[in-house]
Length: 339
Ligand code: X2X
Image (cartoon, rainbow, N blue to C red; front, side, top):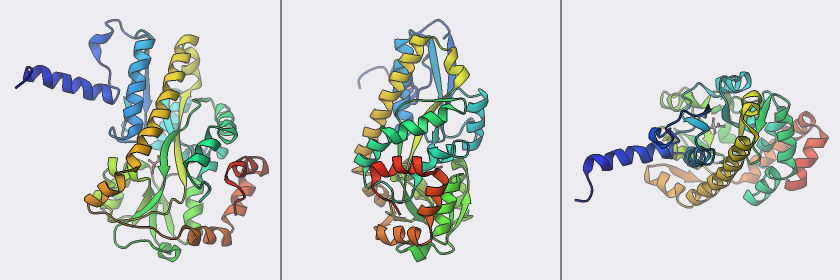
């Protein structure tokens, strides 16, 4: 046996705490000048929380302990829409929020949720790191939030179900599906003839378990880290939309930080976003077979059949009018003509 067992256990606990960004006390004896909370709705094991944990650690070191960011994963501080209010009124300093949910207060932030818009990650990152993302960030700034430059990856979304697989658009007829709280999600699934129900993420597992809904849609990495495979059997690889998280700060809390501390925070958070994207890409290689190992059954529907339904039902026309020609042409600059 190597090492003292108790010491090993302590190191283990410290490593775990560091991995999810909990404060490690003795490192900087002085109390931090700024202790800020960062809330999110994802489990600690999700790459977003792992990468954020590293960023928090680096920010602590590089600011000599002046800025301490405490991570509260798994909706510990409240449901998505509650945290959105908290970060706006300053009760919460940092929050990662799906652009589509943020669209409740910043409509254009939902634009990346247009169904079947992005063919792959190359097009997507070009858009979100380019003019489309810049446009969204400019609008986010107007509601008293400060977005970091890089959006974090949630992923391309897939439809899961409990009772039977979804293979064609008509399988969604009358299908009770949980969607996040956002008009664009409701609109997309209504176009398929489904019965979408808006629900914050912290209620999803139980809603599936008690069969309040037949299914939900989320990227594979989240099915794994939130253990949704325990309560869902089938997964249709529809890639029907891409969704990511804007890392935002409350404007007043951000402005209270000295300029050098702000620079260190922004630089490390954006670097962590890039690391998080890479972690997700790496996990994408094995996550399907892991989920199959847990008993999930996959199918790959013809995405064109789904896209055609959206076209026929006027989904693209409706959302082009809502977003306006200007924003829509920024989207199509990357995706090519939609609808
Ligand atoms: O609520 C969801 O489904 C999630 C976790 O993917 C979002 O935050 C949009």
